[in-house]
Length: 249
Length: 312
Image 1 (tube, rainbow over the protein chains, first blue to last red):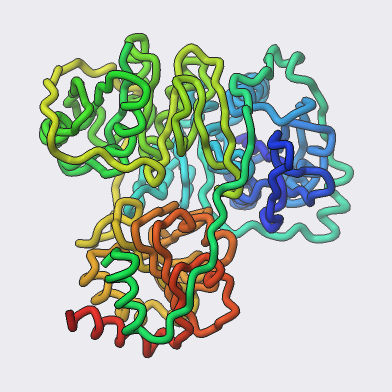
Image 2: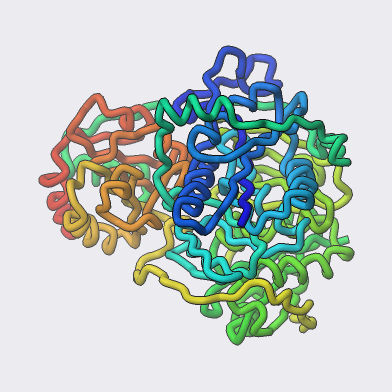
């Protein structure tokens, strides 16, 4: 059984992003980039399925600038078998990404595609659901547990107020939430081995997809700053302030 | 043309974020509310008729929708889409699961988690976990939107009198099936809907100590949350988690107890109206966003707080 795992190159989660003064976006020049953390969890889950003998091949896909090759190499070092880079100048929107992934899925014919539940840059939380829709496949989003047996994926999902378990007929889409697993660090020998694994490079046009965006960014601004308030000396003073000054209790 | 809001409901009751979605939708046109569900759909539809600003409630009662599975629910929304300019839902687990699927079926780029409506095409939404706000303009003829509940005051639960129109189901795709649910049993309000939230962090030291928060939460009608550190340490289940990777909350009062204030936690609560921090480390970053800070050992402060609240 073949698995596809799309991986996105994003600003490293430890970086505090800064809005550009001309309000066209956030500062990306010289900023450390890394694999989207939820995508790392998706790759890890795929590798575990391969280690259990459920999956036979893992294909990591990234869409964007040439440097996305590095993100694919990280996935290969974690245990993916080969990569596909769909080269574009900018990072396309989830709709275009889903169309590109659909075209790849139609050629590769995987039984399962695991994605991160959302990218930590645009926070759209959409690509997995959209890909499922375009392929006409069922979706198990925000997964904290995944089991494959026969032609069924049993997915435990993180929902408001608890967990929900659903059964999906394969082929299916699963999006990874934080609890699904703890991703491994790639070992040095595996990083070396990953350099020899193949990465195919293509363009959206090769897949018949127009990546033109539907959303125009009018501006990007900083959220209103919160100022530190005052220190109170005792619990009694705190309760008094909350009652009479803030009037929230 | 009108706008359609998918209502998230449970046990015949409307989830509060859906009332915020109605408030956002009211800025875009005449609001129709869609209530799809199993046997509980009837009660939820009646509750939806009472929401001020709702002009019509569409009700579909069918076992197909009993568990809000994305596949049949998206198919239903697609059949209704031709009559509407905008399709909205609150950014709840259901809304986030279903709406992008609807958007893809309509060849539309969804606009997730909007925090402000500028005009019919233009919306403000947080990116980078709320560290920046993007104003985006959609060129799609139809808009598919999820609404960040914390950014819109919910419409009242009572005051409206909309008619109910029963409609048929759109069939089941048969590729997904509900197996079971394991919902946390709590008498308390849900984190994202609570007026007051009290969260504990690593400073709580263990899960048993969260019992110190319980009577205070009880007294204030508060939901109890936690930082990712407390969740990762196994003190409390993951659905307690407030932060970038957990729930985003914006209550009137947020009380952070034994929480240092990592960026990832601040992203989940910094829009709260009043923030209180209790921490014994006076250098903790949480004090930089707190309106009221108390440098104290939580194990003495919590019992004192309980006593102080009980006194009045």
